[in-house]
Length: 299
Image (cartoon, rainbow, N blue to C red; front, side, top):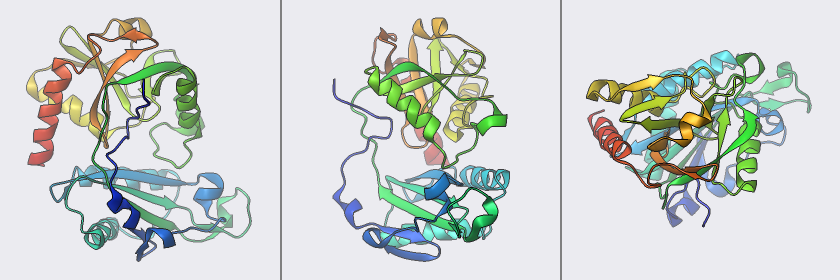
């Protein structure tokens, strides 16, 4: 079985010549570089946000900018501009690239350039570093995703809060590697109590007897697409529960799917070698995809 990821996109040669925003300048991809002393490169000290462009509009822009500023405040990082400034940089990058739809933007803000290669934030004397990478990016996930449960957890907030979109993603990368070693596409991660939580890259849902279950949200990324799906279920009369549930509940699900800004709703075919439902895109997931597509259009 060929390898598939939740962020797999169609090849687009235009991405060879994209323009990248860097600290107020917009420059060609080959010229977009940061210092080896940058806090993000050196220590993963920074936050990021991902957005998608549909038909000329950035989906749920306000929520994404809210989350970016909340994360920056949580790590005591001064972005150096207000909301309008960040949105202006996003739109300037979009205009420079001439992008109108099927594009993905990754906003990355680090604490800036350090004077010495050590951890203390006071050593970051020049910055912040603010980069926007904007690519032509049309999702191309040719089959449902396979998952494997891994020992790595999304942990307690007093270690590294899983709600932070931080540059420090090693825990999730190790989880993904473990899943690949087990022959799966991506990792299913449990919380500190052993309940099903999230994947290494996306929020996780199951469907059982017409009802949708997802985790309590205590130990996973506060996904914007996750919340939109929950809201859509409530508005459309689909029973939805944020609850603790185990792998036993998961293996017997009728459907399973992932949510994220990039792929919206991505079906899951198997978990730990056990087929979920028919192993194909299910009727509830199909219904939610249609509801979400309509929501994006209306937004």
